Amino acid sequence: MGQYAEGLIWPLWLFVVFHLGEERWLHTDSAYTLFRILNHQALFYDRFACELLVWPGQLLTAIGAPISIVLQGLNLILPLMAWATWIAFARHKHRWILFLLIICGGSELFFIGYSEIGLCTWAFLCTLLLIDNLPKHTTQVWQTAGVFLCILILLFSHPAGWLYLPVIIALSLHRMSRKSLGIMSASLCIALILKSVIFPSNAYDSGLYQTLSNPETWSNFFQLLSVNYLLGASWFFIPAVTALACFALGLSKPWRWVSAAFFFIILSDTIVAVVIYAQGDAHINMEKFCYPIGVLSLLSISVYLWGSQEPQHSAYRLKFITAKQREISKSMIGILPWFLSINMLLGIQKYSPDYSNRKLQLQSLTATMPGAKMMAHYDTLSARIFPGSLWGLSYETALITAINKERTGEPSTLKSMKAMTSQELADWGETQKKIGDSLLIGAPFEIPQRIDRLNRRYFEFEQGTTYQLWNPAANR
Image (cartoon, rainbow, N blue to C red; front, top):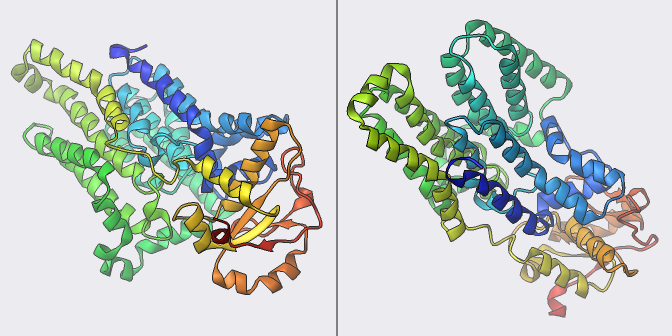
């Protein structure tokens, strides 16, 4: 199970993710993903690595498994991948960095679900362990190939992967041979060029990058919502203090340049992340905005230990640290994952209230809907559900009614609620003429979907019906 029962953390995390899976998968991005998988629809723009996360759901859908089974197949794949990786590196002295997948998740701690940045972070941590395992300045074909594949997964799963790249470059320059570096760098350049030519970045990702070159973003830096969010994020206390403490301690050691360089990377990445994720709704999404910075900040511990264990510094370590002190240090490292995980469970990082009782809220809403296809104003729906994003409500309500129908085995009507703005409601007459009476409206960025083209194994909506306007506040 690993020293100090570290291995028990993985089944504990797996159980929590399983137990709260439906709450997570009935919410916005994850509901959208689950709905499209159940209907055999394409998912990715240019984030091809995410296929590693969704293949269990696609396979289970193909054989007609119940929605709850498909959901858990998607839900558990990343924790299982992380657990298997920990087993593979069980003898590695820095194996505990894999626990950062759990510790730095913020809102995603209990709701991993479909986590692109979670996959990206898994690839990053695997890359660090693989590079550190390489004999210094030697060529190991299989391990170098593994590093190359992990970096591709990192870059092709989420744009935040670029925040991790400076650390990978620094470690590669220190550990890998020139031949391996040359081959890997050339291969990565070719892969990225081919990707950019054949599959250019989608509009959302391109917008993130363009934000960096916008002078107005920098001139209004301290007014950005993401800056205010980070300053008020209680979850960031532990990572920030860890980074500062390791930096301060490192300055007093012979490897001070290592601590200073790593702290500079964290600081630079934080500024870049704050600027990039000020666009759109990402400033409130811990999965996309806070996760990489939290991981890098807590990695300061590993970098500090790595610097102290380098051969040129071993004389300093042996001279000033007694055998007893060394054993105490090892024990502290061993309990670190437990200490941090317990802090999360005790509430230092609490999961987002947006997920709390999500299933009950949707069941309450669908139970009072007078028709199968309804539309209502964002404001009135927010008052009934919760303040926040409702763009995925059409998927969420369709999924909850389909799940209830499967579980009860009784014939019942599938329902879908579309949240609309004042402008969309004003233009509804023209919209209705375009979509006809047999279309299910999806996300704002997606064209309407024909009901007769959905997977009838899960979504058999009645045809010939039109959307009805409803004010849920009047039914309270």
